[in-house]
Image 1 (spheres, rainbow, N blue to C red):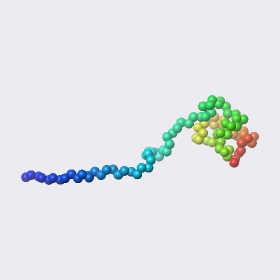
Image 2: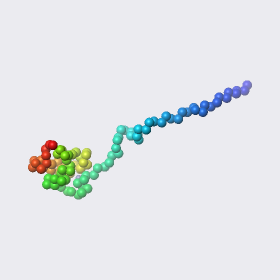
Image 3: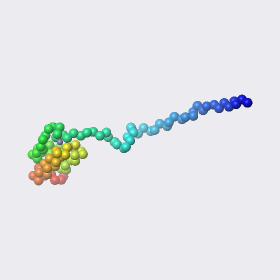
Length: 101
Ligand SMILES: [Zn+2]
């Protein structure tokens, strides 16, 4: 008995994977930006001690409204952040810098 079962192979058996609508590169973990190592600006400029009289430097670490920017934003090291904090508070007391607004 001859088994002549000639099943024609379906040409369109495997449908191509449906292309996903492009929505940017995938970011597993939900991270948006690659971490970039911040360098303390004052360390880079080899400023050993931030004086309250150096208002240009002190003000560059504050917002326009007089708030002290966090280390997370400025990238200042702990030592310099403390010096900035102290300088800002002295300057506020001397009304060189505003307490608010
Ligand atoms: Zn520093």
